[in-house]
Length: 176
Image (cartoon, rainbow, N blue to C red; front, side, top):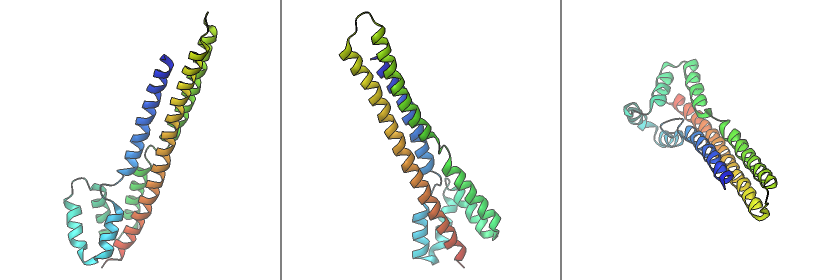
């Protein structure tokens, strides 16, 4: 039972770290580039009002910097902002994969320790030992599955966000 609890603690830590990665991917920018692209494409004449709203939004620092870079008409400044976005979106990108490995390894290691302790005991309760070993492995594999799912979701979210941001920048550069 102790090893199962230990597996739960390790896997919970992995889940928290992986969830934080997903939050970094989702919060790379304050505003959704897809929504902005749709709004600007549907009504280009509304861009000054949209821009004013972006500039008044306290959490939209990256978006304000992008607008300033676009106003400067310097590709290097725009590319710098896109690089900053890429950095922010890729933050902790490897964490879910590492956590998946840690969760599965922990489950198997603790299962092996359960079996070692059971076999070293004077009286072996085979059913209990096998159940505890299986519990440790299952907890580890559940953590692994969660971390892999988070990794895949974060990766697709970042890919989509960066593609939409590129389209938004192209659209904003084409505005008069």
